[in-house]
Image 1 (cartoon, rainbow, N blue to C red):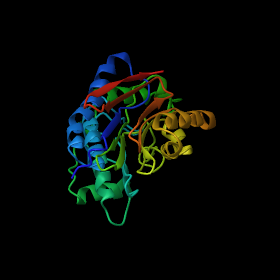
Image 2 (spheres, one colour):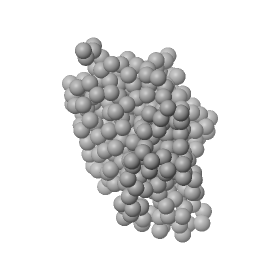
Image 3 (cartoon, rainbow, N blue to C red):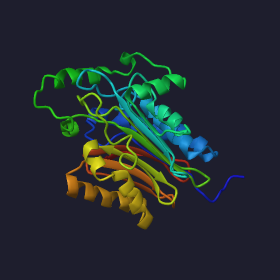
Image 4 (cartoon, helix red, strand yellow):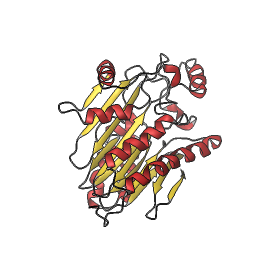
Length: 306
């Protein structure tokens, strides 16, 4: 029998960087679609781990975000994908990095989550795992957008370019989701194509447990987005989860972002749900796309402005 005392919660993000005015509507529409399409199943009893996978799948399919279709090209013109999913009930997780030619890397991570012996696959090993578990590879062109190809052509001519510099110039849409189901279980997932013109094999925060993603029923769940190298240095997602043990989701994110800025000059945003069902969302970047489920089933979405 369903536990009617627990109100299901779902929050997603579509990246915390500079989102140009002309792309605002697409970002808002995308995150709203992810919540609107998956919330009915969540309210009808589907598990948090299944819902965050489904919500991120929707965002991976949309070309406006830097995840799945629409991902950045690395320094040699290839797309390498990272993702992670975590179950707060038992702290089990699955993660993948430097995966190629797969539309839904978070679903590969979900299959790894279900593996009895391993948690994290990278590169050729991740590719082989995906093949052996029935994931169809697609042509690289199916993940590439004209926007990212144009950006690659522009950036490859800039000798002094550094991967985190597009913070002020370029949309960057790592995606993520956090859910609380009617059984009180919390899950989180994050998926990304990384940073533009990154060196081949570079891995950011998204698939690193405690950095870009974390979930624990005793505190809450978090998905982080932003400058991965800075996020990893303070294990931002775990820092937020630890903060939720002593306060609420909103305060925990705000305090963690202050730590990130003070200690390493980091740039990030995060969405969270604490184990009391309270939402948190904040960022120290110009904008962050977000959407969340209201108690009455309404979906609220927007671009958070600083």
